[in-house]
Length: 336
Ligand SMILES: *Cc1c(COP(=O)(O)O)cnc(C)c1O
Image (tube, rainbow, N blue to C red; front, side, top):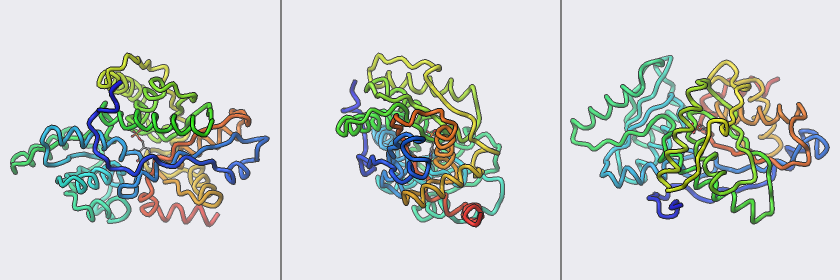
């Protein structure tokens, strides 16, 4: 295992805190109904409002530097946290950032992540939803090459084997924190999108013998292709690390029950989870990812699917700026 000497650029403020959500447990029925919940605060990774993409970018940007890149190119939805973090990483290491952002409606409001992308100096190109994003990424890279730049293309969500190393490293950090506080959680819940986080978490759990099962709550569809791809990413990451760990698709657990109407559309249960976490823990979940994951965890607790004697880790993956792009839906939920 050579994670220690894997090329990495320090972008985040690590380790992130791990703390118990005591008042949330009370709100969910107390110790007779609800397991202990430990919050792993990757919303606090530090760089430009934080989130899980910062960990992936520490490895991706190191790879870009080693290849002599001058510009980071990536894609996502208009309110992509990954795009914002890529723009921030580029600013940190003195590269240009070119973002291809998909949107159903133009003009796009300069709010949340879009506003931050502009402040960070990223070059943003909006394309209609449903276009071939990989082809658009290749187009952006070709345009930059014509200008004499050396573009480094990062896939949507930073989800490839190099990006997944961020969550292998995060697992080492978490397993260490758990050992130091003598915690043995049975499960780790988190929001699952493009699945690079899943690949890293599942590989990391194997490599570092984590006590918990990794349980993703999906925020978008795409099965079974996504599980196939995440398995490949996890095994490619193992190869990079010189690890003999072998990840099987059956080890990738993703609950599809909390997506609602689709990616980026807040759900009633998610909005309820946002309100609960804000009012009992002063923690802000985001409307697109972490609120749906927490809605899944809360529902599993209410169904009695989790033993109250257990301890659960909830990985808060960030997404804070999207709060402000969904202010109307949040306000409506607060009024209820
Ligand atoms: C991208 C993202 C995720 C999902 O991570 P993937 O690696 O794409 O599955 C979860 N939460 C937030 C806030 C994100 O921005």
